[in-house]
Length: 527
Image (cartoon, rainbow, N blue to C red; front, side):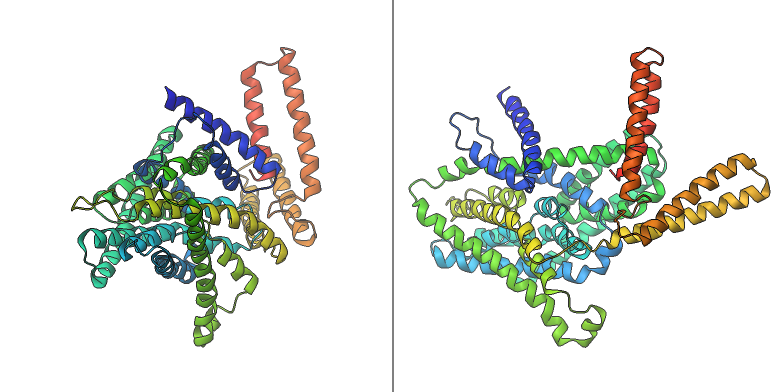
């Protein structure tokens, strides 16, 4: 009963704190972590323990899957080189840099345990990255690279962590074996993800029942992750691959009814899990401090700041070197991918927020070695991981919008222009069909003229958007037109509610009309 009350309380706080974060124009993950940290000092508050199995098996898959589902395969493939440089090269370099710093500060931490710490804190979190970046006005390529990195890098980090733990428990390590294992895990996870995606696609093609299809959609990432872990391949890559595969084929096989309902369901699932995850991070402090009894907390905080600084600085150095060095050495690379604006590179370098995956990985470390001795440095790893998350998520999460504003970086609106052009082509194709059917006499002149007028109006609006200085968001209406239509929709709503209240129409009729008005408003606002 107490657990149920705690969960309800935390979810209620999540809703309230997200509203506050929006009012303060702050990234809500930062506000939730700070709130959880503050709550951890409230006396007699029930302890909320982070269960690694719950995080990895039930939180991680449904949080990664929608991000992969809505990832553009075209853009992901186009930016695969920088994504892999970050997801593989940077993760391994960060692991080594953090390990060196931790072992230098606390020599009692053996190298294998230091490498375990480095693997734990090396990957920026998918949830943190997407939650912060998507609310900032950055060019589309920055968003693609950061989201792509966050989808793939956990696989590298978790495989590296496994080998660090094995080396600590057995006393042996083979670079060749680790490399082969990484390739097998990555390719196996990708292949399984494609298989799961293919099966899910086949099921969706033979169904037209949104509630059943939504259930299958919710189960797809869980099935991909659980099966992958069962056969010891990358569950994260399985989920990501299945998501990207279904994201590509979804527009062809899925009905409009399913898409409208499924989007709302996934939006709610991601919001609740995100909120619960971030507020839970801050609540872990009391348990971590209990592991450090007898230690000098002040000295450990100093060491944790240095470890956090190493993680941040390694990322900054790697991003700039990996961006400019290959181009300076290879003319072919320069021609294919010219030098990017240094300001955009700086944003990528600074956007290295860690999150719940790092903390769950730290909690998942074994307590004892096979010989019965305690896992060396486990308490230090937990504390340092917690501090790295706080520093990167709070400090970098709060300063990233400031950095973007100071550097004068703006959204390039490339997707808006692509959307406008696609709308023009689609409307012209539809208008051509209407003209053809009108000439054939398949429909009455009144019917075809009405529809022709509607498409002519849409094309006129799109042309106006192309010529106007006003931003239409890629849609079919200028802001002035949207304001006018919004006022007209509001009057329609007020009228049908008045008719319902006067008992002229019943609630069924009200809801039918209201649904049409809701869809019209959704088209108008793009939500």
